[in-house]
Length: 293
Image (cartoon, rainbow, N blue to C red; front, side, top):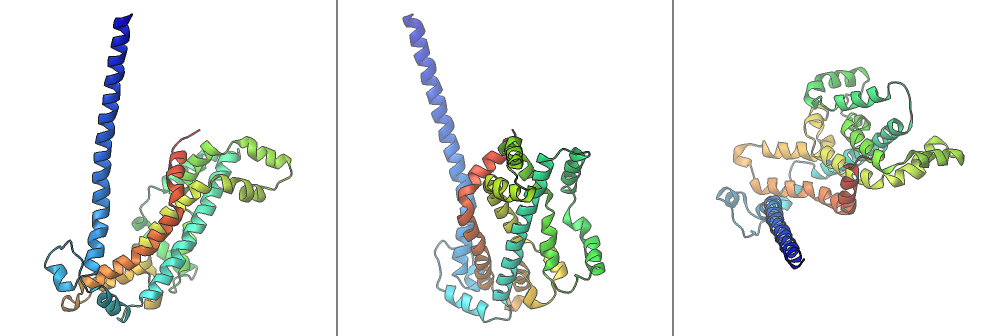
């Protein structure tokens, strides 16, 4: 008996040592990944404070004294950066709101209702997700011409956000694990209409998933360069990614790296703010959405 107890203690000790080793390795790997992710933000901020000639001379870990000058030159330059900021915010916020609301509504319909072709529709929506945007660009532009929305309007960048297959897939997985059908049936018995049930019962349940997808959609729309570059022509309608590209494509003799870094830092600030506001939902939302009931 004593020998068995001794062996059990040895096994438990070895298991604890193994757990500690795995934990140490995990901390080292996570610390390395964190450093690699944050280092480039540090480089961005440092370069935003340096002159163009100093940046071209090589990397320096110490900040310079050109931040205000770079910012003043950028603001008083030819690019309408405040209009670009407003345009990017309007497009990104509207896209995120429409995408999350209607994608969650589509996922709710597929999850709750039982009708012929239900599985086929869900599979078809996922198949659409595999088609790259570049493949459908010409057809999209032709459609805009037919419906008269090709006149330097932001609507073609907002309305298509209603149909988001990737967001639908995520919301469908989340609803499968978080929304029992009994809740919807109880609401119907109490006389609640379908739209009221969705807005007052389902939406609060899927709030973490909506927050996660709102962040993803906002960032995707904010960083989108391809589609806005095809549609927007007037300078006062262009978004920040287009203006950054114009700033970088200037004449080589007038190319100011300090301005470019300042504008990139300026452009990512709203994304950081949105992330900080909704970050508390990310871990819980992703973890719950990855578990299928």
